[in-house]
Length: 335
Image 1: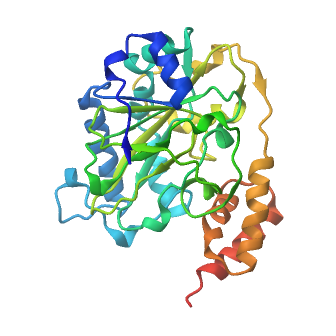
Image 2 (image 1 turned 60 degrees about the horizontal axis):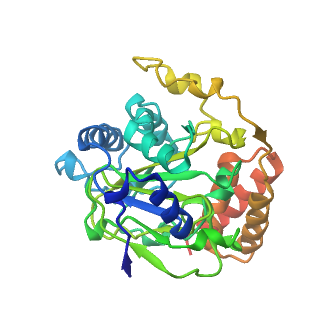
């Protein structure tokens, strides 16, 4: 596999950043963020993870050795119990406002950008490769404008066995790909492989920026430690936005609960002054995934599990939730 094109040397060159993003759909920048706030947040998250049974208590906390008896994935209820506490940490939300992130994106776009309040924290257990994040496009869950950019960064160095993220360079130029249900985050994967995959090891402080239409995937975590990372999304203030991007990622927790113990209101409700054009969220992608997931589940195919879990956690249709719960119980029955 080819390595990422390193864009560290052109972070101050807006025109070159535009050229590379338009051509490749991503920018990889070394040492863009200071290490201390990332490693500090990681330890705070690991304390919560240990309390939730995700981290082995016999090993030093900073090693993040996973307790595989506590394995779970988003959006399972037992995952959300821990993630709910992580999501309330003020320092987590402050990260996406770091000037190094905002200034690079504003040089690239040529105008002010705003981070979506729906920041996302990812915790990936090791040795559960079936639940590795599959190839997908972020546009489907984000929507609004296609020109949304994700900043993905780990909270610690990622040795090869811990994995990271890979990009199908140039894949953002071909529209929305066909997809199907699968295990892992989002519960869907693209059908055709776009090829031209690139990747590299990550060190703490490295940031991977990518366009919402570019195909990307997780790398399996084959080590023994949890992998913790952050997805922060940004767009130009002048572009339309979906109101779904203004809601917390951990649903149905309201912002009032997220903010309850924050020491400052600096980053609370900052988007309310944003005179944005709001566009309706297109649920047809989710509905298509869910229809296929029901069909697969009725055939006994466990690949539908993640999509069923998302229906149960996030759908508003009571009958649909009940159907998903029934099928999920059948799929999870011992053979």
